[in-house]
Length: 415
Image (cartoon, rainbow, N blue to C red; front, side, top):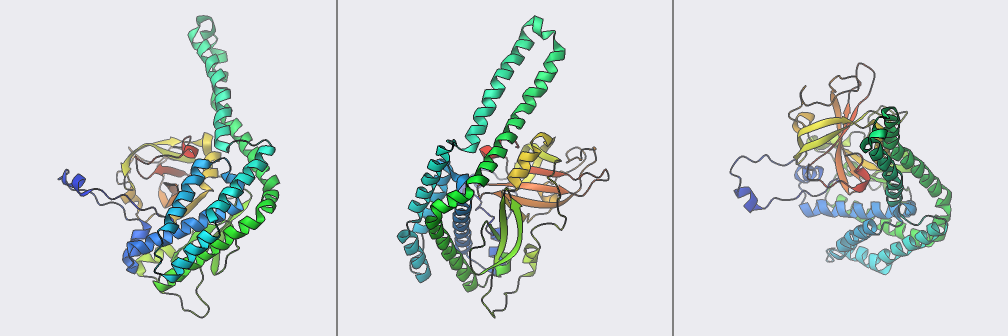
């Protein structure tokens, strides 16, 4: 449920302009839960919004350096959190207490102070802008002179004849940005690892307040779910800390020097778990396949030039993205995963020899698993996993879920 964004509702006038049959949109996981459990849309929204607040506070507290010099992203998240807290229904005593706690603890002010304090420490050690800006600037400094040199080789006749020099330079131009990116990322993660404890120590008192409030929000969600008789084992979410009560740890995995923990809510002592409707039992399955990946995957296909909407893909061009495989692995490690509610034939109805995902050996890939990847609650996309090919290779494919989706800057090199 926490993985799902509300889908846009088409205006009634727009529908009247199109007399032809309109294909119904794909139901989100939240909508499926709502219908099966007899919930109101506001109940679903409440849980989703509160889980967003908890994940934001937890991520910020555990990896504060990840948020430095990112005023726009932090500002958007703070605005969303504040807007929701100000909209709480204060006739419910529990909501009134939560709002009072949010205001009295000055959660927004504390987060702004922690961010500013951390930025000052980072700046004193040579980090004065966010990672993405540094990567773009360095890549630009390298590629512009190289492309200028290539222009000289192709335009001036005397140089154009030196084709045997042209191709090595072209390869260098293509590969250099990736080398730079890898080097900068490595140094950034080393910087975070070396300064993590100092950052935490300096901000410890404020971080404890943030985590305490996150715990209050978690207890509020749990209480509401029990009141609505929602099976707690269905609500899975991720956090970077185990410092909270009334949670069941169901899985964990390392991500860039951190542990990411997967939780469900714990039932009160002696309380029998609520039964799960038959059509929702698929959501109780393990989050990850049993196969353990011993090394980062390299065979990534991206469905470029994708045409489609509402989760249904009508057209694509499969493109091997082996040069950005490390970047794809890094982005996937930042995502939360949920099983796609629709089957493969529904998602790609025109899958055939003329439009298929291919293995590196040329065989058509047979898709066995489809996940919806949620990147920091800002961007969702598909991850298709194919059965192991007879050549021994494993293939993974990524695709947008709607051609109109705005791709974040962090994914521009991928999509």
